[in-house]
Every structure is written in C-alpha cells, then in structure tokens.
Amino acid sequence: MRSAQLGKSISEVEVTNISKHGFWLLLDGRELFLPFEEFPWFRHVPVGKLLNVELPHADHLYWPDLDVDLAVESIEHPERFPLISKMRPKQGT
Image 1 (cartoon, one colour):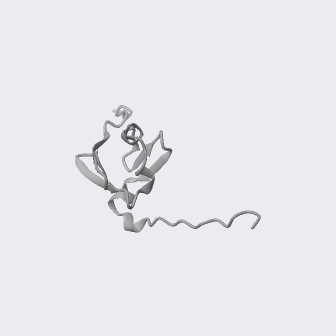
Image 2 (cartoon, helix red, strand yellow):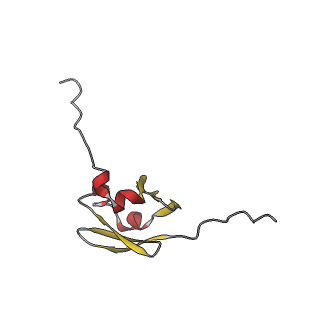
Image 3 (tube, one colour):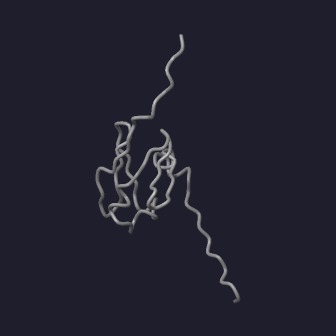
C-alpha cells in the first residue's frame, strides 16, 4: 500500500500586533516578537507590506513586497545572527 502524496502545508503566519517597538507574528500557535531594534528593515514600511508575509517552509518566512527572507531561528535567537554593516568608501575620493 502506498501513501498519498503530501499536500500543501496548512501552517500559516500572521502579524497580530504592531507597536512603535516592533511587531508580533503568530506562527504555529506561538507568538514571536520582532523588535525594530534587531530587525530594522521593517521599521518604516507601510503596514500593508508588513502584513503581507508568507511561510514557504516551516522554518522560513518571506515578505514579498519587501524582498525580505528570515529564518524562524533568527527571530527566536537573534543573538546568533548579528547584523553586521560596513560603510563603503566613496568612489573617487
């Protein structure tokens, strides 16, 4: 006997609240907080773009309007994924 092919995942993700400090996602029955301090690319985006979040895989989130991908682990353990940015030298100076 063969099992039927697995269907599309029914797990969903939803933005449940937004404050001046960050926003909350409901994912698989748990709520995750994304502080703007640690996820600055969400700070000044329109609400509609923030709400448009997809869950392509159980451990992967995607905001198509912002072209932002995040591993769920980076939300649960941001200390393991430090933001590192370096200024580029100006051209011609």
